[in-house]
Length: 82
Image (cartoon, rainbow, N blue to C red):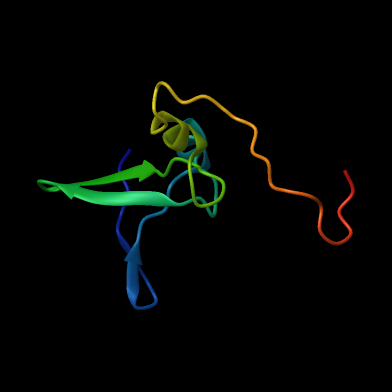
């Protein structure tokens, strides 16, 4: 595909055909990572992570011998229902 860099206001930009964006599963409003390698501009979709943390990354940092234990927080205080 050949595209032309065009002026948009005080910036320059490229337009991508809908079919191209569908192929790489990028939608309008999605974030992309833009980098330069040599004389090439690389545009990659940012991995979609809901919230601030990625659950898979957090779980991968847990020690292998980690075991879940019940914690006693004391008697109810206030209007908690058990």
